Length: 74
Image (tube, rainbow, N blue to C red; front, side, top):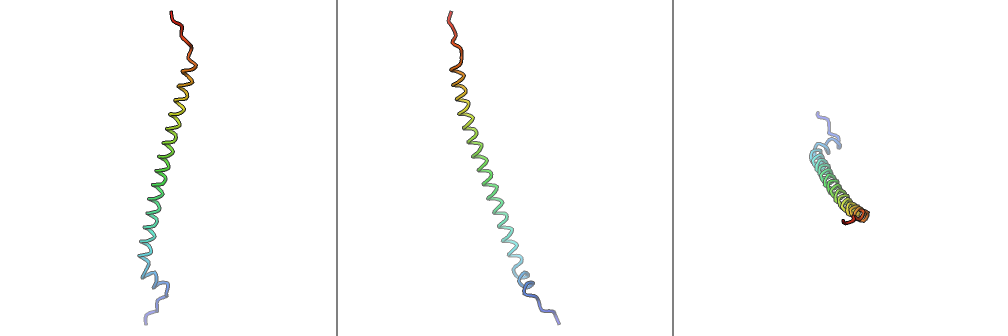
């Protein structure tokens, strides 16, 4: 006479594969969204640093132009 299955075993035999698919799909989705978030944040930081560099270069040019010695003619 076959041994009766445990309710736990019966549950995982029936729903184990769908649960695994949902879990793996969720992990993949999380990783994809996380990677996208990090990429966008990195692009934003690069843009801010580029703008800051341009601003600082402009300030440096203005200061350098103001400090140039006046050349005498003749």
